[in-house]
Length: 165
Image (cartoon, rainbow, N blue to C red; front, top):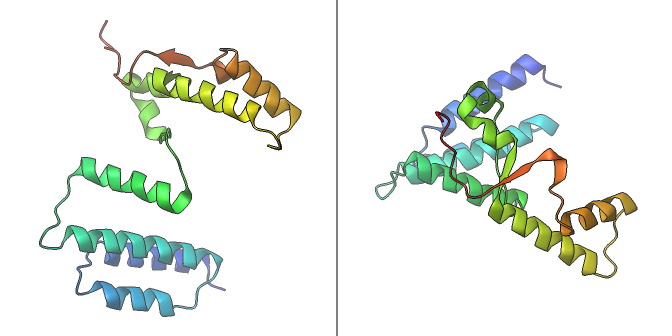
């Protein structure tokens, strides 16, 4: 079994290499990753490095060249198809807590999400045979009755409020 430092160095090498891939070099890189004798950790790094390499190869192709905004869209498409993360969903980063203009991210949900949450709670309450713990059912009933969970507030839109006022 490899030590942590060795595995982390391998991970670093794979991701560094992944960011330089082209459509021509990608098959060799994928072959190298697939032929490695993986353990529980290295297979995760290899699959992730493969995905990153394929993204860079496409972006480096003659018709590539995506923006940072588009890269975010790619991440959400990947999350949906690989991890089954179905919208509404959001990503919180701890670093965002360093900037006061981001306070809304940790205290509020958009009105559209609140409407979806109530609809989903009602749907699950009406489904027969949906196994759920009584505490979960009680939580759904509260949401359906209009109680916003977890001390959150509902904001009127996805727009960030003006922090200067």
